[in-house]
Image (cartoon, rainbow, N blue to C red; front, side, top):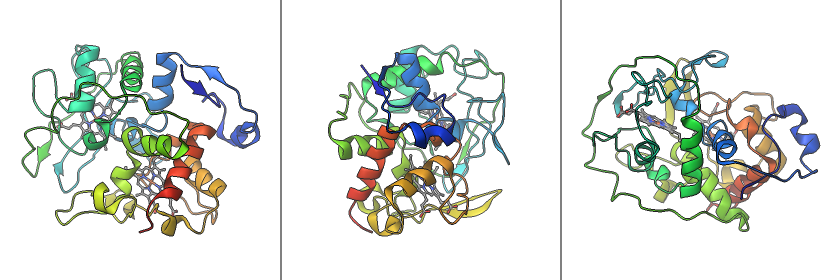
Length: 282
Ligand code: HEC
Ligand code: HEC
């Protein structure tokens, strides 16, 4: 059974007032899936078009966002249940295989930048919840163009994932690692690049520096290791992630998922911060 500190319906501005009054409530798989997808997992940060004011209304998860990069010219696909332009004809097991193994029902491989390196470690229970929620969102008709990859795709992302055990919340740092890795893929964007220009969580974990170009100009993923965050208190880090605004008033640029992290519970935020504070300084 999952426990939640704060129902996501509470507006952000009152989060800080109620965070001490721990409201523990059980979540159904649907609620857990909605909490994850609309929060820390943020599938929409790639699968929903964005305007100057954030995700385009009425187009949630319908694809069409330009997520091009060194890997090629890529427009995200529609993952709503529309049977023709989305994934409405895929079974729950087929959607799970797409998320963890990167395989479509026809056996073809899904390309970057979908973060399979991390999604392979999403726990079974959370994957079930994510898919339950995905299958419940409104079907939206939106045709998206096929990607043009600049490099050959690998043969696979590894052997098929059979089962992933749930990560216990009792160990704050370990649970934070699960949130910032498999679920939130924070570390996909925030790890330094290797010699081939690909994110390198192994050697560059949390080191930052990846450049992202878009209509906003260019942004560089921040160093999230203790060196990078030394100037901020824990509360400040949580506020930056939730609101996208630093203590000096500056706003975080895309593709930092600022439109999604507002609803992350206090308990989960504490785990993320504990994990970031535990990283080897870079
Ligand atoms: C960093 C960006 C990114 C994130 C985050 C992301 N995706 Fe994707 N996803 C993509 C791209 C790009 C493709 C298409 C790649 C291709 O065409 O080969 C894709 C493809 C898919 C497909 C296959 C669709 C099809 O018609 O072939 C599914 C299903 C999917 N994503 C689900 C999800 C879910 C569920 C999440 C959240 C748990 C998610 N994605 C998070 C970028 C992302
Ligand atoms: C799709 C890429 C991407 C993902 C995913 C992402 N970030 Fe970021 N993040 C960025 C970029 C780019 C910046 C820098 C924005 C700027 O400088 O305006 C940033 C900035 C930040 C900052 C500000 C640091 C500072 O020194 O001001 C924090 C904290 C942060 N991210 C934490 C997180 C956490 C925690 C997660 C996961 C829940 C996450 N990020 C997920 C790209 C990403």
